[in-house]
Amino acid sequence: MRAIEINFAPPGWRCFVASMRLIHWGLATLGLLLCISGIVLASHYAQQNAFHQTELAKVNSAARVLPVVKKTALTDEQMTAINTAIGQLNLPWSQLFKAIELATPSTVALLELVPDAKNHQIKGIAEAQTPEMMLTYIQKLKEQDFLGNVILTKHEVSEQVPNGALRFEFEAEWLEGGR
Image (cartoon, rainbow, N blue to C red; front, top):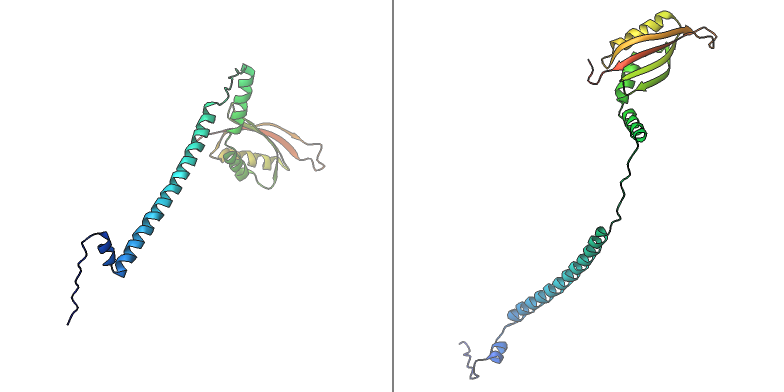
């Protein structure tokens, strides 16, 4: 036979607490712990937010107090020098070197290359052992897609070299997109 529960106490919170089972106490404790941890986390995030807001206010106030930079006018000579330097820096060096390297055989010594960015020209000085090697080199330069109007401007027998090598100068234009 089952036991009959008889309770003469008036219903209230004490009666409710006394009738709670162990699982109910465990769930109530878990809920309380979750609430406390939520409050702690919310407090922590509120402190971080306040710290970041003060740092942002400092950065914004520092940004408003930037020093005023005076604009200085450049002279025409300075502007010309700057534009010349920019033109020299914007030369298509890799394409120029590749075209000249492809055309230069081992029998020709390339001594000097001088670019002229304003006129899209390049001047060079080289040495070869024979006139045929010199003419072959000039012809190979003419065959390069990136170079145009290749001309031989000067040639002479070099007295500085014991074998009497032929020193010559040439000019070429570089083409922006090739032929």
